[in-house]
Length: 75
Image (tube, rainbow, N blue to C red; front, side, top):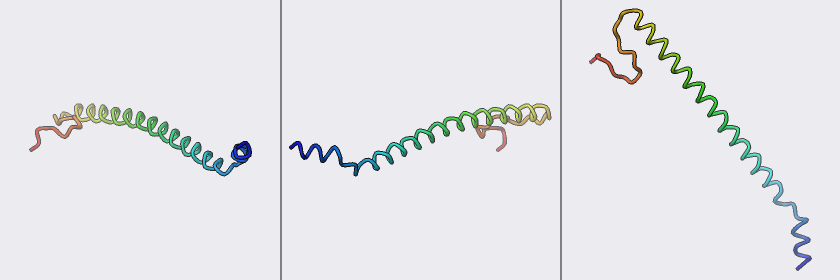
């Protein structure tokens, strides 16, 4: 029985698999962080574009609907 445990302790055949699992987990964590950062920046950019378009349309006196929801008086 002790021979089995000593052989098991010296066996490193699964060590490469553990390395790949750790590496894959790090890549997934990094991807989640990148997506969260980009999403926040895109929300800010979209809000700024909407604000600037609303200001430009309001200044032109066109009277158009400035919401981005697809609503409006056009039929």
